Image (cartoon, rainbow, N blue to C red; front, side):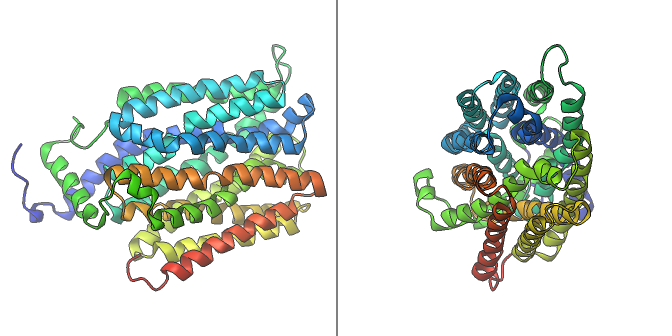
Length: 433
């Protein structure tokens, strides 16, 4: 290996070109993977429009099945992320994507609540290594100073999956009903599960495990990237996996993420039903209207993250986004049966909640590195995603009990307010953002 070049040789124009090269190589593939991943996870929100009546299930059964995904997710996320760090992103992400694609498609065969719970549990196990694995993977390529923007480019896949997937999901349910003797919701699981299998194969053929393994980078480019990663790692704590489990900052961040996830999946799993409650009945029309909140959130995530990186105030922007999401959720409950005001409120709620996501992940990656990052990110994500079980189940149970989902929306709005307050009070006066 040639000696490392002097810092001055890394001129800004060269650095911009190198990062642009990395972004265009890495982000599009990971982005598409997350689109199909998130679609497989939440398409039961659209399947619910017909699935429950076809099978004779209650909202509580649906909420439990939607949420039990996160029990499997919670139990296997830490070991899955450690496996990725040990065996490499290419093989591990490729393998689990193929696996969850087939599991998602097999949801078409469920007939009883128990079968539904079992398949959702194993789908959670399969998907448990993807999101935290990608967050860890980004720490191999990008320094802290640009991770909010990189995270936003990746995490807008949630919103884009809504923009693309919502009208497609509604169209499939409406137009494939009784095709070859299958219900529309059964076709939904098949047609939206197989793309994950295809993307898993793409990852196996295309993704590189590290900067050093990337044949498409020359030596000078590799040295620049490695130098920037080394600079960003100066503030990392060097602790073992066991010590990560006892780290107070990790558990505090886990609680913050739990509050965020309460809002995220409260919206994701119930957004089609919220739109339906305003008076829109056709599944395809519900899908088209879903584009509005998700499209707005896509733009908001990119713009807000870029501003936060530019001003170095990730926590300030995070708390404001959380407050905006809370306000939108409250208004969703108030205008539950008004199409115009209900959609405006849902758009504010979706954009506010989703904008907090890339900003949040700048916090743990700023002080965790190596195996500690693999374990810490997984702990935060797995504990936080337990809210993915609590949130839909809670809303389903409240809806069955009170015949209204508004109270459930107020509860998750309270979680977003608490998130904003804790970020504000604990970090507001700290110099470093």
